[in-house]
Length: 401
Image (cartoon, rainbow, N blue to C red; front, side, top):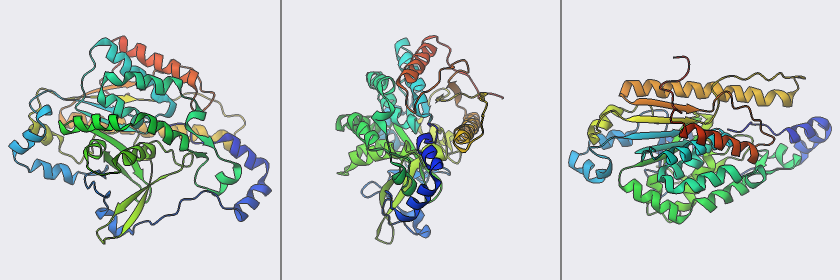
């Protein structure tokens, strides 16, 4: 994820504390009206018209448990394209502009002719934005390259005024990001995802439910294949929510139906607020899933971690408030991500998956001049491209094991 700070706004507020205090007391910023559900209904909330659109991401899956109870012939009829064959899975992490690394790696992997057709693809934050392209295969590499080598900060976000930021819900507006998502997530792309979903392949996106403080896993393929009239708008909002960095970007509201017959809304932000990368909850018996599908050989999971794993030295002098925010959040994100990798590795070992990890190498020393720096992203894309074409981008375990 990008650094969660807005130095210009913070500096201006610090220069004028009296003005900032006055504005906080007298003005009203952009805050979304809400109808939040009561906590006792949290387990019965559903997206209108798409009951299988999502599930909690931190426990077992009732949907998978129910699926495991179905007759084998029913499963094989529904998932014929993924039964009795080898499986490969792809997990794309958050990382903001660093998503250019993963995009380059995927494109370089395509160039080698060895990139598999993934049975399952997951994405968080910037990884969520790349996931539909990765899921649909090398035919969408041009879109991946375009997004991650031609985009600037001004193409994605617009900085709010000091007044709006201090009295609202974020430092930036994301209308431009929403428009970019609309440009790439077209009806044609959504239908292509639906076609692959009907074959049994899976595409899953993570967000964080701020009301519940829990991760949510969205079944992007089920949304694409649904008959809901607003499925395209929902799919776009899921991607926007997964990339909506708390405080920096405004949260995204989703309408939900409850068991009491009333309609409420949920508040969702970046999936990276609860996990930087994921495959499936440890509570899921993946061995049983593999057996049900007749998976051949040992499934492989490829994790593209759009960050460095090593800590970097950056002297903070002077230690002002604005100077402290970025390294503090960067440290939290890095260590959380390493923990997520350990969790995925443990699950892979338990369930018999071959684990592969690629990450931004420590010797990549380019620096960003803005949140989404086109020059920085292009160089990082090229580094990922070269790393894939070298034939040796993968580690077989997280560092320190």
